[in-house]
Every structure is written in C-alpha cells, then in structure tokens.
Image (cartoon, rainbow, N blue to C red; front, side, top):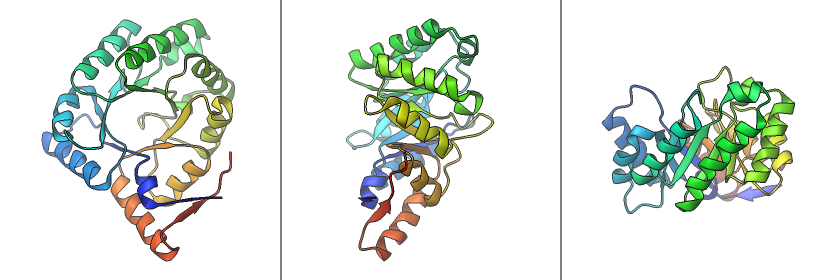
Length: 239
C-alpha cells in the first residue's frame, strides 16, 4: 500500500482534449485548468501545439502533441516529420500511435524501426516519448511483444489507448504492460478513465501517467477523499 498526496496524483494527469472540433476557447480552458491543478501535461492534437505552448508559457505544465493520431496509419517518415514539427512548435512530449497493420502482420522490424526513429527525434531534442499501443485491438501476446520492443528501444512510456478505439484502458492490460516493461519503461493508462475510482485502479495496476479529459472532476473527488484520510490517498500496488 502506498500513500499519495492529491498533488502527487494530479501531477500524473495528462489533461486531454483531442476532439476534431477543438476551438481556441476550449484550448485556452484546457491549459488554464492544467495550470491551476498542476497537471503533468496538456494533451492535444499536433496542430494545437504552438497555441497551447503560448498558453502554458512559464508554467510547470508540459505540452503534449499526439502524432499519427488516432489511427497510426501514416508512414514512418510522416510521423517523424510530424513529431519534429510539433517539437519545433513547442511540444515537450510526443504521444505517437503505432501502425496496427504492421503489428497484425507480425512485422516487428518495421514496428521497432518506427519506434526507434521517433524516440531518437525526441531524445535528440530532450523531449519525452510515449508509444500508444491501442490495446483493445491487440492480443496479450502482441502486447507482450510491443513491450519487449519498447524495453529494447526505451521510449519513456508505453500507453494503452487513444480513446478512439473500441475500448479504453483496462487494469488487466496496464498490469500486464507494467510487468513486461519492469522499470525500463513507464506505463500510461488512457481511454475511459472518468472518475477517481478508475483512476486509482490504473495507478494500482502500475500506471504512472493517466490520460483523461476528466482530470478536474477526478482531482476534486480525490480532494474529498484525502480530506477524510488526513490528506493522503492510499492505493495498493497490484501489479
């Protein structure tokens, strides 16, 4: 059992708005909330990077750009260019979607090369890289193989979901990923995490980042719980 402060848990949240109809007003609201609650990152589509970098200037919140999002069905060169462009526009973190066609074909060399190239771009620029697996479409063996590749290439995180697939994160998949990568790579859970109970389950299963559009309401729930327990949230480690 580990005890967390609300501030520590809030610092694990990637505050997310990746809808196609995102407006400047919504981006400003997202960034204002991220500043107020000291979330880890504002997670946005790459075209919003420069705008959010301006809104978050002089804050402790990172700008996170989604690359090849949400389908992952672009070439390696296209993803590399998009990642480089996002970094030039102020991105601190890159979350890219893998090519599921190549995964399903068992083309692991392609998948590894894609990961290596994008991780290299991030590493050369001092930025974080997260690899989105979209676990709802993968078998357990495919998840294990992707984690094995990640351990070799060493992105900063493997991530469950885009939020656009047939399902989001599950505690089972998060725990599996955590066991597979050990301490070499961190795990991010995202997709369908809308309340404190689910948030805590993902942390319990081994996630150290949580992608959610419900960060504000989750933190408010956690604040209420912490008030009842001397300022701390107790979460078991179940992975």
